[in-house]
Image (cartoon, rainbow, N blue to C red; front, top):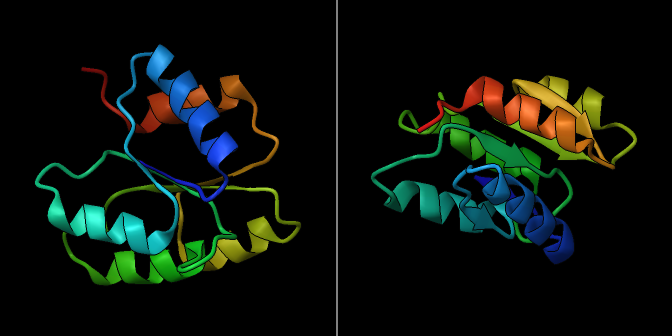
Length: 118
C-alpha cells in the first residue's frame, strides 16, 4: 500500500511498481488508508508511508496503525523529503526510511525484501 498525498508521486510510484508486477493499493492520506485497511480482508504486505500529508499525516496514521492488532504487524517504510524524516521515523517504530527523491532500484529492493512474490 502506498500512502502519499502528492498525486504525481503517487501515480509515478504506482506505475513503476505495477510495471514490476507489484500490486499496489493507494491512499491520499492516513485517514483514507485506515478506512481501507480496516475494511479489507486482505491487508497489504507492506505500507509505503509519506509523513507530510493533510487530513491525517504519517505519524498520526502510524499511531492508529499500531493500536489495531490486525494492522500493527504490517511493516512500514517511510518515504519522505522532510529534513528530519529519519529522526521522526525513529520514534514511530518503522522498518525503514527512504528519502525523496527516491531511487527506483532502492525502492524495488525494499519492496522485494518485504513482499512475497506471487
